[in-house]
Length: 216
Image: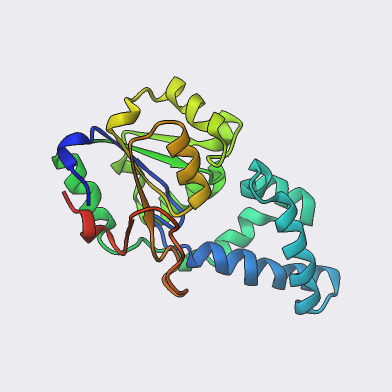
């Protein structure tokens, strides 16, 4: 699936790609609505209806990924709530073996994530993945989410690489399409970002079940 001799830089998404998206899905779809319902005196069903509408309005923007934005919007301490269910943070199978194999093969590894800095810190503390990367680039630092072509243009300013020899692995089709438009030569989707949900539609992209599929 991957001609590794053609790849110099590996760009890796975090949530849903390296980490099981079950944590984030449970957090936003179950835990936050429960705490919001308690705070506002709402039924859980009404809280979910209200929050899903709010989420939808923020989708595709940096606000959707911003811990501070949701703390202000909802009147909840989102970082604290994230800690309440941090036991659900989990690394997908074979990820650390894959990262070790990339290091042994001499590839440059860059984490490119829409996750807010506070979320990254919590997940790195829980998983110890942080030390594997040559660089970590957060979309909040560049001012645009990865779904925007401009993110990939700005990425080149802080982390120069040859797009034709770069591989991006991501679970978002919108992100993969923006990266393709920017000229990144090798793209892979993830079939099961959430281990407890059915495999997702990966559109026109090749995709992996686990990192064993493409181990260098």
